[in-house]
Image 1 (tube, helix red, strand yellow):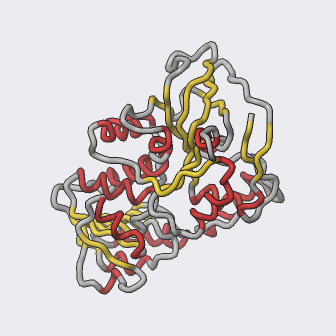
Image 2: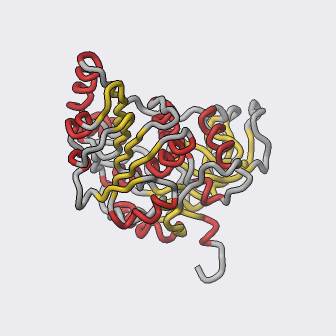
Image 3: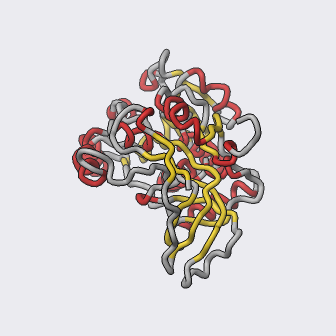
Amino acid sequence: MKAIVYNKYGAPDVLQIKEIERPKPKDDEVLIKVHSAEVTKADCEMRSFNFAVKWFWLPLRLAFGVFKPKKNILGGYFSGDIERVGENVTKFVVGDKIFGSAQMRLGAYGEYLCLPDNYTIIKKPNNMSYEEAAAVPLGGLNALHFMRKANIKEGDKVLINGAGGSIGTFAIQIAKNMGAEVTAVDSPIKEAMLRQLGVDYFIDYTQENVATQGKTYDAIFNMVANSRYSDFIKILNSNGRYLIGNPKLVDMFRSVVTSKLTDKIVMFSFAGEKEEELITLRSMIEAGKIRSVVDKIYSFNQITQAHHRVETEKRIGIVVLSFDLDKKPNN
């Protein structure tokens, strides 16, 4: 089978397409024929070993490889078909069209992938293409997790910083479905897309400081790692909830102090990527309440271009790889 592999850390050109042996499922595993995979910021960070949240550096280096990657096939979020099932698998049958998360096993940058059937994998929405479905699990699962933590009520004023990313685009839609008034903060190239998703107000961070707008919020969801903690606490209402998606170590300590000594609540808990959450997302998608925003679809032969697109932050939505694109004429 074909797979995109990397054997050293570095720029996108360390990624190479190789022929490797197709994996075989164990008794409790399924063999997935991958159709599409999301290209994430985390993929780029693992490839280059340059993480936005620096305090992760040492544990991640030990986990992923000190001098070179232990797991040399990236890709955590995907869509595809069930090709084979292990003896003990009852959840799926051959031919099921699925989507989900490979968790820390990764491997979705390959034509085939083996995963335990108890991973967060379910049948994909019937009103989505494989490419659209692959763009759901990362952003959708994280957004649903944090919006539930925010305990949003009808009429709440919600601010989302870094709203134009994979997680932010889903957070906007989920918050709007919960009845919130949503303000999005991001770069001006994403404004039109964010307004199409239903944001009520847009702040261009290159021109305006959200902390000096004179407006306060009931819930703030921050996905930008280098943000100033104090700026967001200042514009949070009493009994407001501040959720940090990419927490710095110092902000974790500050969150405990703020939550104990003030009337504001700060949370940074990481998403568990539960099956129930993915089922909820599928129901919302099939009901037309939320959708994935796909920026561009690349063939697997265009993997370096896809990583460049994600790293330069010029994408307007989610970047997706498609094995199917390689099989179409003139590609």
